[in-house]
Length: 417
Image 1 (spheres, helix red, strand yellow):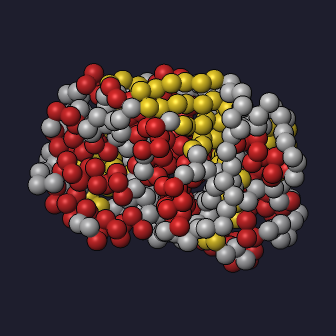
Image 2: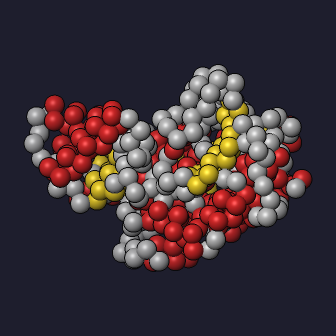
Protein backbone atom coordinates (compact mmCIF):
# COMPACT_ATOMS: atom_id res chain seq x y z
CA UNK A 1 0.00 0.00 0.00
CA UNK A 2 1.33 3.41 -0.96
CA UNK A 3 2.25 6.17 1.43
CA UNK A 4 0.54 9.55 1.37
CA UNK A 5 2.53 12.79 1.42
CA UNK A 6 1.68 13.19 5.12
CA UNK A 7 2.93 9.71 5.98
CA UNK A 8 6.18 10.37 4.15
CA UNK A 9 6.85 13.72 5.84
CA UNK A 10 6.01 12.41 9.30
CA UNK A 11 8.14 9.30 8.70
CA UNK A 12 11.07 11.54 7.78
CA UNK A 13 10.50 13.66 10.90
CA UNK A 14 10.47 10.51 13.04
CA UNK A 15 13.57 9.04 11.39
CA UNK A 16 11.61 6.07 10.03
CA UNK A 17 11.23 4.59 6.55
CA UNK A 18 7.44 4.51 6.74
CA UNK A 19 4.55 5.05 9.15
CA UNK A 20 1.01 3.69 9.33
CA UNK A 21 -2.27 5.61 9.53
CA UNK A 22 -3.17 6.34 13.19
CA UNK A 23 0.35 5.50 14.35
CA UNK A 24 1.69 7.78 17.08
CA UNK A 25 5.06 9.18 16.01
CA UNK A 26 7.64 11.24 17.87
CA UNK A 27 8.87 13.84 15.40
CA UNK A 28 11.35 16.70 15.25
CA UNK A 29 9.74 19.63 13.40
CA UNK A 30 11.72 21.78 10.99
CA UNK A 31 9.91 24.99 11.98
CA UNK A 32 7.90 25.98 15.06
CA UNK A 33 5.79 29.13 14.80
CA UNK A 34 4.23 31.25 17.54
CA UNK A 35 2.95 34.83 17.71
CA UNK A 36 1.56 37.10 20.44
CA UNK A 37 0.86 33.95 22.46
CA UNK A 38 4.63 33.46 22.89
CA UNK A 39 4.51 35.27 26.25
CA UNK A 40 2.24 32.60 27.71
CA UNK A 41 4.27 29.85 26.00
CA UNK A 42 7.53 31.19 27.43
CA UNK A 43 6.03 31.17 30.92
CA UNK A 44 5.12 27.50 30.52
CA UNK A 45 8.59 26.76 29.18
CA UNK A 46 10.23 28.35 32.22
CA UNK A 47 8.00 26.38 34.61
CA UNK A 48 9.48 23.22 33.10
CA UNK A 49 12.80 24.12 34.69
CA UNK A 50 14.67 24.30 31.38
CA UNK A 51 16.90 27.32 30.95
CA UNK A 52 17.71 27.25 27.23
CA UNK A 53 15.76 26.39 24.09
CA UNK A 54 16.62 23.06 22.51
CA UNK A 55 17.30 24.84 19.19
CA UNK A 56 16.55 28.57 18.82
CA UNK A 57 16.99 28.34 15.04
CA UNK A 58 13.86 26.19 14.78
CA UNK A 59 11.56 28.88 16.18
CA UNK A 60 9.90 31.72 14.28
CA UNK A 61 7.98 34.36 16.24
CA UNK A 62 5.76 36.99 14.64
CA UNK A 63 3.88 39.72 16.50
CA UNK A 64 0.63 40.20 14.58
CA UNK A 65 -2.53 39.68 16.64
CA UNK A 66 -2.67 43.09 18.34
CA UNK A 67 -0.16 45.38 16.66
CA UNK A 68 0.64 48.03 17.66
CA UNK A 69 -0.34 47.21 21.24
CA UNK A 70 -3.87 48.44 22.01
CA UNK A 71 -3.52 48.51 25.80
CA UNK A 72 -0.97 48.27 28.59
CA UNK A 73 -1.74 44.56 28.87
CA UNK A 74 -0.86 43.97 25.21
CA UNK A 75 2.19 46.22 25.48
CA UNK A 76 3.49 44.18 28.42
CA UNK A 77 2.81 40.99 26.46
CA UNK A 78 4.96 42.24 23.59
CA UNK A 79 7.67 43.44 25.98
CA UNK A 80 7.82 39.97 27.58
CA UNK A 81 8.20 38.37 24.16
CA UNK A 82 10.98 40.73 23.09
CA UNK A 83 12.88 39.99 26.29
CA UNK A 84 12.44 36.24 25.82
CA UNK A 85 13.65 36.48 22.21
CA UNK A 86 16.77 38.36 23.29
CA UNK A 87 17.42 36.04 26.22
CA UNK A 88 17.16 32.88 24.10
CA UNK A 89 18.93 34.19 21.00
CA UNK A 90 15.99 33.64 18.64
CA UNK A 91 17.08 35.03 15.27
CA UNK A 92 13.78 34.66 13.43
CA UNK A 93 11.75 37.31 15.23
CA UNK A 94 9.42 39.64 13.35
CA UNK A 95 8.14 42.58 15.36
CA UNK A 96 4.95 44.58 14.88
CA UNK A 97 5.83 46.07 11.49
CA UNK A 98 6.08 42.86 9.43
CA UNK A 99 2.54 41.49 9.11
CA UNK A 100 0.53 38.36 9.79
CA UNK A 101 2.44 35.19 10.67
CA UNK A 102 0.81 33.06 7.96
CA UNK A 103 1.95 35.50 5.29
CA UNK A 104 5.31 36.43 6.80
CA UNK A 105 6.62 32.87 7.18
CA UNK A 106 6.20 31.95 3.49
CA UNK A 107 7.48 35.34 2.32
CA UNK A 108 10.58 35.13 4.49
CA UNK A 109 11.53 31.65 3.27
CA UNK A 110 10.60 29.63 6.36
CA UNK A 111 8.21 27.41 4.39
CA UNK A 112 9.41 24.93 1.80
CA UNK A 113 8.12 21.74 0.19
CA UNK A 114 8.64 18.64 2.30
CA UNK A 115 9.06 20.58 5.55
CA UNK A 116 7.39 19.57 8.81
CA UNK A 117 5.95 22.72 10.39
CA UNK A 118 3.89 23.18 13.53
CA UNK A 119 2.54 26.40 14.95
CA UNK A 120 0.56 27.55 17.94
CA UNK A 121 -2.24 28.82 15.72
CA UNK A 122 -4.94 26.76 14.04
CA UNK A 123 -4.40 28.35 10.63
CA UNK A 124 -0.84 27.07 10.41
CA UNK A 125 -2.44 24.77 7.80
CA UNK A 126 -1.88 27.66 5.34
CA UNK A 127 1.68 26.52 4.61
CA UNK A 128 0.52 23.28 3.01
CA UNK A 129 -0.12 25.31 -0.14
CA UNK A 130 3.65 25.23 -0.67
CA UNK A 131 3.93 21.47 -0.22
CA UNK A 132 4.71 21.34 3.51
CA UNK A 133 3.06 19.37 6.30
CA UNK A 134 1.79 22.20 8.49
CA UNK A 135 -0.45 21.77 11.53
CA UNK A 136 -1.66 23.82 14.45
CA UNK A 137 -0.71 22.73 17.97
CA UNK A 138 -1.38 23.97 21.51
CA UNK A 139 0.67 26.40 23.55
CA UNK A 140 1.88 23.77 26.00
CA UNK A 141 3.00 21.59 23.09
CA UNK A 142 5.00 24.51 21.70
CA UNK A 143 6.61 25.00 25.11
CA UNK A 144 7.52 21.30 25.17
CA UNK A 145 9.20 21.59 21.77
CA UNK A 146 11.16 24.55 23.11
CA UNK A 147 12.42 22.29 25.88
CA UNK A 148 13.09 18.97 24.12
CA UNK A 149 12.80 19.68 20.39
CA UNK A 150 10.17 17.00 19.71
CA UNK A 151 6.42 16.45 19.66
CA UNK A 152 4.21 13.43 19.18
CA UNK A 153 1.58 13.38 16.45
CA UNK A 154 -0.94 10.83 15.26
CA UNK A 155 -0.60 10.09 11.56
CA UNK A 156 -3.82 11.29 9.89
CA UNK A 157 -5.67 9.59 7.09
CA UNK A 158 -5.96 11.61 3.88
CA UNK A 159 -8.95 12.99 2.02
CA UNK A 160 -8.39 13.88 -1.62
CA UNK A 161 -10.35 16.74 -3.19
CA UNK A 162 -10.21 16.70 -6.99
CA UNK A 163 -11.17 20.01 -8.58
CA UNK A 164 -11.75 20.68 -12.27
CA UNK A 165 -13.32 23.43 -14.37
CA UNK A 166 -12.72 27.16 -14.60
CA UNK A 167 -14.10 29.78 -12.23
CA UNK A 168 -16.63 32.22 -13.63
CA UNK A 169 -15.95 35.95 -13.48
CA UNK A 170 -15.87 37.27 -9.88
CA UNK A 171 -15.89 33.75 -8.42
CA UNK A 172 -12.76 32.19 -6.97
CA UNK A 173 -10.87 30.21 -4.36
CA UNK A 174 -12.68 31.70 -1.33
CA UNK A 175 -16.05 30.78 -2.81
CA UNK A 176 -14.89 27.23 -3.43
CA UNK A 177 -13.46 26.62 0.04
CA UNK A 178 -16.61 28.02 1.65
CA UNK A 179 -18.72 25.70 -0.52
CA UNK A 180 -16.54 22.73 0.44
CA UNK A 181 -16.83 23.53 4.17
CA UNK A 182 -20.57 24.00 3.77
CA UNK A 183 -20.88 20.58 2.14
CA UNK A 184 -18.66 18.72 4.62
CA UNK A 185 -19.51 20.56 7.83
CA UNK A 186 -17.23 21.99 10.48
CA UNK A 187 -16.06 18.49 11.44
CA UNK A 188 -16.15 16.94 7.97
CA UNK A 189 -12.38 16.63 7.77
CA UNK A 190 -11.70 16.04 11.44
CA UNK A 191 -8.01 15.16 12.01
CA UNK A 192 -7.55 14.37 8.33
CA UNK A 193 -5.04 15.59 5.81
CA UNK A 194 -6.72 17.26 2.83
CA UNK A 195 -4.95 16.90 -0.51
CA UNK A 196 -6.13 19.26 -3.26
CA UNK A 197 -5.49 18.12 -6.84
CA UNK A 198 -6.87 18.68 -10.32
CA UNK A 199 -6.76 21.15 -13.22
CA UNK A 200 -8.51 23.95 -11.28
CA UNK A 201 -5.87 23.72 -8.54
CA UNK A 202 -3.07 23.67 -11.11
CA UNK A 203 -4.49 26.86 -12.64
CA UNK A 204 -4.60 28.69 -9.29
CA UNK A 205 -2.02 31.25 -8.31
CA UNK A 206 -0.05 30.45 -5.16
CA UNK A 207 -1.91 33.21 -3.30
CA UNK A 208 -5.23 31.45 -3.91
CA UNK A 209 -3.80 28.10 -2.90
CA UNK A 210 -2.80 29.67 0.42
CA UNK A 211 -6.43 30.70 0.92
CA UNK A 212 -7.66 27.14 0.42
CA UNK A 213 -5.18 25.57 2.82
CA UNK A 214 -5.74 28.33 5.37
CA UNK A 215 -9.40 27.40 5.69
CA UNK A 216 -9.00 23.63 5.89
CA UNK A 217 -8.81 24.29 9.63
CA UNK A 218 -12.49 25.24 9.47
CA UNK A 219 -13.46 21.71 8.44
CA UNK A 220 -11.45 20.25 11.32
CA UNK A 221 -8.53 19.12 9.16
CA UNK A 222 -5.10 18.47 10.61
CA UNK A 223 -3.41 19.87 7.53
CA UNK A 224 -4.03 20.86 3.92
CA UNK A 225 -1.67 20.16 1.05
CA UNK A 226 -1.03 20.92 -2.62
CA UNK A 227 1.45 19.34 -4.97
CA UNK A 228 4.52 21.53 -5.47
CA UNK A 229 4.74 22.54 -9.13
CA UNK A 230 6.40 25.14 -11.35
CA UNK A 231 4.31 27.92 -9.82
CA UNK A 232 5.46 26.84 -6.38
CA UNK A 233 9.08 26.74 -7.51
CA UNK A 234 8.89 30.21 -9.09
CA UNK A 235 7.17 31.71 -6.03
CA UNK A 236 9.82 30.28 -3.71
CA UNK A 237 12.73 31.14 -5.96
CA UNK A 238 11.62 34.78 -5.98
CA UNK A 239 12.12 34.67 -2.21
CA UNK A 240 15.48 32.96 -2.33
CA UNK A 241 14.24 29.47 -1.41
CA UNK A 242 15.95 26.83 -3.55
CA UNK A 243 17.10 23.98 -1.30
CA UNK A 244 14.21 21.57 -0.64
CA UNK A 245 12.98 18.08 -1.39
CA UNK A 246 9.31 17.91 -2.51
CA UNK A 247 7.16 15.06 -1.26
CA UNK A 248 4.31 13.47 -3.23
CA UNK A 249 1.73 10.82 -2.40
CA UNK A 250 2.36 7.46 -4.01
CA UNK A 251 0.11 6.58 -6.98
CA UNK A 252 -1.36 3.65 -5.03
CA UNK A 253 -2.19 5.67 -1.92
CA UNK A 254 -5.52 4.63 -0.43
CA UNK A 255 -7.58 7.70 0.47
CA UNK A 256 -10.15 7.76 3.23
CA UNK A 257 -12.40 9.72 0.91
CA UNK A 258 -12.26 11.19 -2.59
CA UNK A 259 -14.42 14.19 -3.50
CA UNK A 260 -14.93 15.54 -7.02
CA UNK A 261 -15.86 19.15 -7.76
CA UNK A 262 -16.38 21.12 -10.96
CA UNK A 263 -16.16 24.85 -10.19
CA UNK A 264 -17.44 25.99 -13.59
CA UNK A 265 -20.98 26.58 -12.31
CA UNK A 266 -20.00 27.77 -8.83
CA UNK A 267 -21.67 30.98 -7.66
CA UNK A 268 -20.35 33.47 -5.11
CA UNK A 269 -20.74 31.98 -1.62
CA UNK A 270 -20.89 33.29 1.93
CA UNK A 271 -20.91 31.85 5.43
CA UNK A 272 -23.75 33.32 7.47
CA UNK A 273 -23.66 33.77 11.26
CA UNK A 274 -22.55 32.13 13.44
CA UNK A 275 -20.69 29.13 11.96
CA UNK A 276 -18.31 28.79 9.04
CA UNK A 277 -20.26 25.83 7.64
CA UNK A 278 -23.52 27.84 7.42
CA UNK A 279 -22.83 28.41 3.72
CA UNK A 280 -25.22 29.80 1.11
CA UNK A 281 -25.05 31.46 -2.31
CA UNK A 282 -24.58 35.19 -1.81
CA UNK A 283 -27.79 35.90 -3.73
CA UNK A 284 -29.83 34.29 -0.93
CA UNK A 285 -28.69 37.05 1.44
CA UNK A 286 -28.66 39.88 -1.08
CA UNK A 287 -30.09 43.09 0.34
CA UNK A 288 -29.03 42.51 3.95
CA UNK A 289 -27.74 45.90 5.21
CA UNK A 290 -24.15 46.01 6.50
CA UNK A 291 -22.23 48.44 8.69
CA UNK A 292 -18.65 47.28 8.14
CA UNK A 293 -16.67 45.57 5.39
CA UNK A 294 -13.33 43.97 6.22
CA UNK A 295 -10.80 43.17 3.50
CA UNK A 296 -7.67 41.37 4.67
CA UNK A 297 -6.53 38.85 7.33
CA UNK A 298 -4.42 35.72 6.81
CA UNK A 299 -7.13 34.35 4.52
CA UNK A 300 -7.53 37.13 1.97
CA UNK A 301 -5.06 39.93 2.67
CA UNK A 302 -2.69 39.15 -0.18
CA UNK A 303 -1.97 41.36 -3.18
CA UNK A 304 -4.33 39.53 -5.54
CA UNK A 305 -7.15 39.96 -3.01
CA UNK A 306 -6.56 43.70 -2.82
CA UNK A 307 -6.43 43.83 -6.63
CA UNK A 308 -9.81 42.13 -6.93
CA UNK A 309 -11.45 44.54 -4.53
CA UNK A 310 -9.78 47.54 -6.19
CA UNK A 311 -11.02 46.45 -9.62
CA UNK A 312 -14.60 46.72 -8.36
CA UNK A 313 -14.09 49.95 -6.42
CA UNK A 314 -12.05 51.90 -8.99
CA UNK A 315 -13.70 55.21 -9.76
CA UNK A 316 -16.57 54.56 -7.36
CA UNK A 317 -17.45 55.51 -3.77
CA UNK A 318 -18.21 53.20 -0.86
CA UNK A 319 -21.68 53.65 0.60
CA UNK A 320 -21.39 56.39 3.27
CA UNK A 321 -23.14 54.15 5.80
CA UNK A 322 -20.35 51.55 5.54
CA UNK A 323 -16.91 51.51 7.16
CA UNK A 324 -14.52 49.58 4.93
CA UNK A 325 -11.25 48.54 6.56
CA UNK A 326 -8.33 47.17 4.57
CA UNK A 327 -5.69 45.12 6.38
CA UNK A 328 -2.90 43.93 4.05
CA UNK A 329 -1.37 40.64 5.17
CA UNK A 330 2.22 41.88 5.29
CA UNK A 331 4.44 44.89 4.76
CA UNK A 332 5.54 43.29 1.48
CA UNK A 333 1.92 43.39 0.32
CA UNK A 334 1.60 46.99 1.55
CA UNK A 335 4.61 48.10 -0.47
CA UNK A 336 3.55 46.31 -3.64
CA UNK A 337 0.04 47.73 -3.31
CA UNK A 338 1.58 51.20 -2.89
CA UNK A 339 3.76 50.81 -5.95
CA UNK A 340 0.96 49.68 -8.28
CA UNK A 341 -1.61 52.18 -7.02
CA UNK A 342 -3.96 49.66 -5.41
CA UNK A 343 -3.97 51.35 -2.01
CA UNK A 344 -4.65 54.71 -3.65
CA UNK A 345 -7.64 53.23 -5.49
CA UNK A 346 -9.04 51.74 -2.29
CA UNK A 347 -8.47 54.95 -0.36
CA UNK A 348 -10.09 57.13 -3.02
CA UNK A 349 -13.13 54.87 -2.88
CA UNK A 350 -13.41 55.61 0.84
CA UNK A 351 -11.69 52.61 2.43
CA UNK A 352 -9.54 53.06 5.54
CA UNK A 353 -6.06 51.64 4.97
CA UNK A 354 -4.78 49.94 8.12
CA UNK A 355 -1.42 48.49 9.12
CA UNK A 356 -0.47 44.93 8.20
CA UNK A 357 -1.83 42.68 10.93
CA UNK A 358 -4.80 40.68 12.15
CA UNK A 359 -6.82 43.75 13.08
CA UNK A 360 -10.36 43.08 14.35
CA UNK A 361 -10.45 39.46 13.14
CA UNK A 362 -10.02 38.16 16.69
CA UNK A 363 -11.96 40.98 18.34
CA UNK A 364 -8.92 42.64 19.93
CA UNK A 365 -8.84 46.10 18.34
CA UNK A 366 -8.98 48.23 15.18
CA UNK A 367 -12.58 47.79 14.11
CA UNK A 368 -14.46 45.57 16.54
CA UNK A 369 -18.25 45.55 16.26
CA UNK A 370 -20.97 47.01 18.46
CA UNK A 371 -24.20 45.17 19.36
CA UNK A 372 -26.54 44.90 16.39
CA UNK A 373 -23.90 45.67 13.78
CA UNK A 374 -23.29 43.55 10.69
CA UNK A 375 -19.89 42.99 9.09
CA UNK A 376 -19.03 41.22 5.85
CA UNK A 377 -15.46 39.98 6.03
CA UNK A 378 -12.84 38.07 4.07
CA UNK A 379 -11.65 36.40 7.30
CA UNK A 380 -11.97 32.72 8.18
CA UNK A 381 -14.22 32.71 11.26
CA UNK A 382 -17.60 34.21 12.11
CA UNK A 383 -18.30 32.74 15.56
CA UNK A 384 -20.53 34.68 17.92
CA UNK A 385 -18.44 37.39 19.55
CA UNK A 386 -15.49 36.76 17.23
CA UNK A 387 -15.20 40.43 16.24
CA UNK A 388 -16.38 42.05 19.45
CA UNK A 389 -20.01 42.02 20.56
CA UNK A 390 -21.80 38.68 20.85
CA UNK A 391 -24.82 40.52 19.47
CA UNK A 392 -23.09 41.41 16.19
CA UNK A 393 -23.25 39.36 12.99
CA UNK A 394 -20.28 38.42 10.80
CA UNK A 395 -20.63 37.09 7.25
CA UNK A 396 -17.62 35.56 5.49
CA UNK A 397 -17.14 36.06 1.78
CA UNK A 398 -14.65 36.70 -1.02
CA UNK A 399 -12.85 40.00 -1.68
CA UNK A 400 -15.16 40.62 -4.64
CA UNK A 401 -18.31 40.11 -2.56
CA UNK A 402 -16.96 42.27 0.28
CA UNK A 403 -16.09 45.10 -2.13
CA UNK A 404 -19.44 44.89 -3.91
CA UNK A 405 -21.28 44.97 -0.60
CA UNK A 406 -19.27 47.99 0.58
CA UNK A 407 -20.33 49.85 -2.55
CA UNK A 408 -24.04 49.18 -2.15
CA UNK A 409 -24.32 49.16 1.65
CA UNK A 410 -25.86 45.72 1.63
CA UNK A 411 -24.82 42.16 0.87
CA UNK A 412 -24.39 42.06 -2.89
CA UNK A 413 -23.57 39.41 -5.45
CA UNK A 414 -20.53 40.94 -7.20
CA UNK A 415 -21.71 39.61 -10.56
CA UNK A 416 -24.61 42.08 -10.48
CA UNK A 417 -22.34 45.13 -10.64
